[in-house]
Image (cartoon, rainbow, N blue to C red; front, side, top):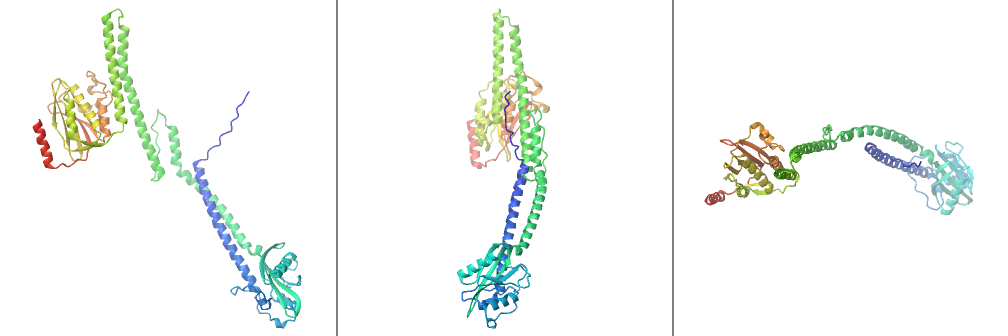
Length: 508
């Protein structure tokens, strides 16, 4: 049996862990930079103090130093020397260096030695520091460096006694063939031990601080990311059959704003799915009737009877035509609900004149334009004309033959109104919202042709313009359908408006 081998995909690092890692990385860099700068500053300060001590502690020798330039002493640092040694009091370099070694006692972490002709001759009898007389490597180095430079030398040597910072001063005396060298050294490791201890303490404190930051950051990041975690859980719980889950929004930060945005998106999605379900249910119900009718007549049709076949044929064609109109209306409703509208300034007088010319050819009724608004409204002229014409067609279907139907437009400070007034049976107040539903009619009557989507299309166009459709009673009986949309009225000078009214009256 062949067994496929697949490497397990690495588990992705959670957002919480990434945030915490970034915080710890920044904290580590910051603590390292601060610790490093502090260590370097303290180390340089200690090295400067060491050099000052070396120069100050041998200042008494400079009066008998060789003619080569000597190192500049530092006058602001305390030394162990308490007096100057006069060269006239000594007869040789050996005697002078013996006195210097005896009187300049090294302090702690210090050592000194007097070298005659390249060999260690004298060392302090009181060793409060360390013994340099056995450090052959340092002595040989100092002898070689002073012979080469011809003067005082300051340097650092890594020896068996540790890292030593030393000063070597050659000593000569007129009439004495011996060559002397006084060496003074300070143990840098011992001098830097307080700095090292401080940095070690700082490092331990930094590790403890990082652990505390990690612990606190873990809980803080978890609390901040809890809305995202709830978002993930809510998204997993949402299905097409249950879109009611929502994320609790708390606070005023960016994550809470995102939570409210997602909840709003879920509301729109749930509304859209509900509308689609309703539409599918309505379409299924509306298509079932003509299919049942056609199938029933086909089953009962007598194929040998020509007249029966012709009647069944005519009925089937009529039902198919009705289904075609239904599909066209569904497509139109989807278009007006989803299309991008071209919103421009629409002249209401021009729009009213256009609707008047279009309804004049609808037979069976007397059409009249009762009022024309003067002004503009922001909208899509073609869609508004489509909705207004649908209201007129609806009024023609439900009005008695020969009954007059009036249309008009008006405008005020806040709204523009496009209305159609019929003199039919009217609509009861409790049914006025129902007629705007898909495939619905007042009283549930289907004696009038149509798909039942006309008023739903009108309301969709009105909502796209931030408007509403309303129904009121017509004086004397009937219903008045109105489309009300917000507007920005244009102030027209009175003489121009008056002239236009006169011209319309003369034209009529």
